[in-house]
Length: 144
Image 1: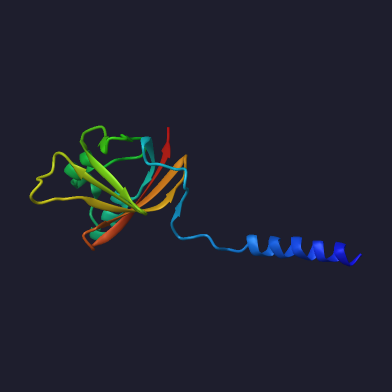
Image 2: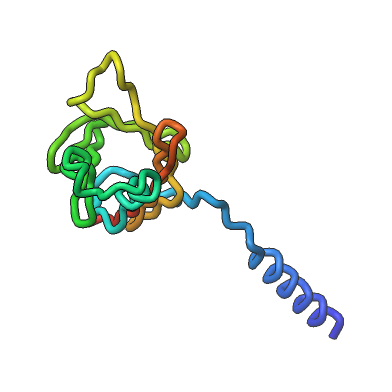
């Protein structure tokens, strides 16, 4: 009888320890990789611009064309390059930071743009991009 009570106590102890709320703010699954083709499911860049400037985003034609919108795709290749609908470049990942560098930007002026990976699983990726300390915006993607 005492062995059965001890066994039940051990099982319940493990259940309480393993069910704790120990989720990190940044969730990166060990088996997940950025390599592959991703489709944008959410991008609040233009909303943040509107909030920040109180401007009508239609006045920002250049930013409108260059920014990735919901439905656009980006492919990260194993060789450290990437491609979107209108640009190519290089990428690297270190911990929870994804860095990209566009081929169309002046190499002397722009180096890598760093994005914090908030979530990376085999099917989803969530990034936060800080724009030179002025504001940040979030991008969510799903692997296709």
